[in-house]
Length: 356
Image (cartoon, rainbow, N blue to C red; front, top):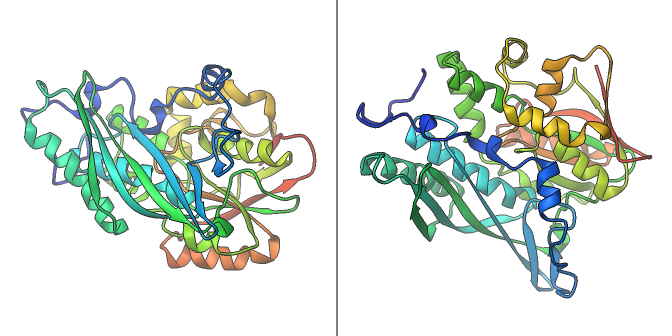
């Protein structure tokens, strides 16, 4: 099984062997989550709460003044890889992505640490913590504290705080008819993680997994400053279809997506066809298949990729067609060479139509 040079000592069990799932594939399915939140109290009395739970957006946003709002989010999960340092990096990058997806700049983070302390040596747990610190240092912010508990399964993540000008805030619900849809990172993280668990991932595949999951979505604030960018979210545990459906429901629009134009990580379609898929992709599909129309020629592997849980996935941007060039230029400057226009928003029922 591929690992990096920071792998734990031989005496420590593999991190993924200690958990029943990994990364954003651990998320509760969209259908079950909706049922759990069905009777939650409304946040309507809080006038300065600009973004709450209404549209399943990436973070909460509270306005402090005319030119400043605070953005708050939290994200944590069980290991997607066995290397502790890489696990810490991936979890931290994934948590900070929600700040960037709102168009905000992160200010600080708090660590969330739950570890089987009688099973994992302290040196392994320290490497997880150092991985999170390394990503936060790359983002230019401190981990200023946190909370830890003894747990049966290893869990790590962050609570993150950011700041944004209310005028630059990008919700997931304000796409407009005719907007182009641009995806910043290729799909397939869940496929690669499934191959890793099955012992079928090559060294190059592992490097691709680490490369995409640890790349910070730092293009977010720059994209948010463009008035023609109308909506933004990041594609994580609910897969491309799930997060795009969130956009559609919020804007009361439909969407069209081209499978051929959707960027994929190398070899993931073949891996999906060979059975390297996550249980989460099936749960995702069960939650929203009634709202999706797939072209007949698209098979089960394509469906798995469209529903594939993306740990630390890419930004999904809805922008006016005349802003596409500028958006792609920004993605390119931040190292997202595979960013691509994958479809558009259309008038009609909140349904996603996927063409081949």
